[in-house]
Length: 277
Image (cartoon, rainbow, N blue to C red; front, side):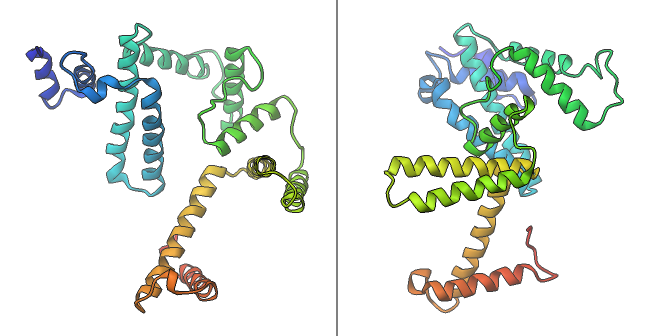
């Protein structure tokens, strides 16, 4: 039977974080909770956690400030969900999670809560941060780079770790040379390689692209998101132009659609354009 006092906490507005924690505990109650929520575990919830993080990033990128509050709440719910499952297994709970990250912030900011000087640039502070993290790891250079990260982001993190111990091209020109080499190898060998070998060569090429982005100070994930948005915007302009004539892309051809693409591209460059490029 449900505890009416706990249900009152769940259903009373204004309870903030304690209310959210109580709601999650109620949903996971093995006797009176939600069957779907009870069945979940860390692995099954992890994809939702990643999705919610991306939705937060998407709202920020679009400047959708009216949506951001809700997206942050959805992401917080994921933390609460994992913390509840941790508490059920006797591993950790929300309080210990919050305490651990709070102490990490104290330890990694000696220029705020310690004797280190605050008279450092942002770049110097980042270097100090990374040095503390390296000391905490005390393992191999690449340890701790999460496997679940998006591949481009993980490539950059792996490269940054290797660069900190001197394993890096000193000049961007050398990265460009490697990029051309990998692209040439893929083109020349694609007809005689197996599907698995083509995939491997493609991976090598993308890894070098990520390295080039790093050398240029560009976030490859952000750059690709921007390119995706641009492609979507311009292709939809093609569809709109064809729809005005009662046609679809399937009823057009490449030459016509390419011309419409160029028209959409030119339109974005007008002074009154709303393009974000």
